[in-house]
Length: 400
Image (cartoon, rainbow, N blue to C red; front, side, top):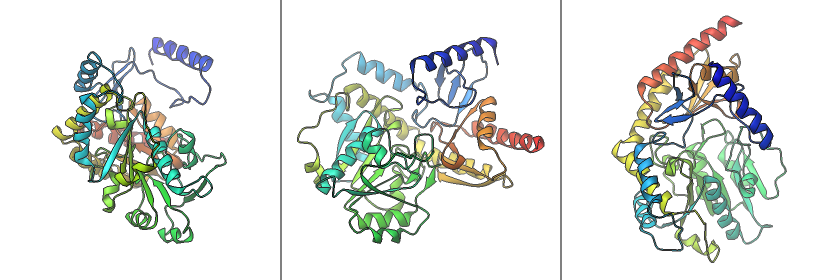
């Protein structure tokens, strides 16, 4: 590593330690400094070789996408205003988004997926009548965000370890490996929140049978699409569509505006009465975020990125499974995959060594390697990654 880079890293580490709590964690034992990014590449100071990003599912249509840059500049240099005043960007965007929403739903915009999930949970809580009567289901391995309500229904912390704080709400965490008939043991449970593909939980899929049982048993079904929406899983625009169901509430965030802060809570019209009498979010649905989010939909459509996600995901999964002596299975769909290694492989070491070879991936629950790159990733980049995984596996075997 370049000496100057080491000095920069040391300085940043010292300043983070001085000014921030330890809870502001960082990835990697030996972090690298990101100076800029483009498409699916990260660039570090004085390092001529870019890092290939296989983990950032926020910059959905690529880092520093030129159309996003232009949209931010154009909108912000005109006006950045909230929803109390009439502005066309809000209605132009929601009309475009409505093409992907079933009939009979309304929308409120937020600043993040956590805020969207929090609003969805507030609706479910009001629907129940009181805190005392509010009973909600969630899944083991779930993670739904950083607010108090989101923490209540999350089984894991953002790092993929068990959240050990005592819950104040009456939440039951179902094991997704159990039979969905378990729901019949909880007749008083009227709400359920779930990720169709659990993100922090290792990009693992909840079965269609579970989704259909939940839909038939509860009054308020919340589908958290913060990580999987907008075509990420390849086969569908929303991951829950695989089960041919309609939830009561759909939440989204992260990729909705390619990293510009935004989220959305999409709910059935009949739930409108369970909202506060007046709703205002200073930045939710502002004129800049709406213009940026519209560009995301346009890019998805024009470049057929959902279809690309399906093709690249199937190819990557097939290539990885060739390492059958070391990789037990690959879960997930599209460009949202979890790689399950056998117990002989130190996954944390694998992730660190991939970083040293300029590939950025992450770790989820139970040391599952997580892959969720910008949707623009190419077959060439995938081939380089798969070859590097093979090289590291051989190196790790020889070390023993």
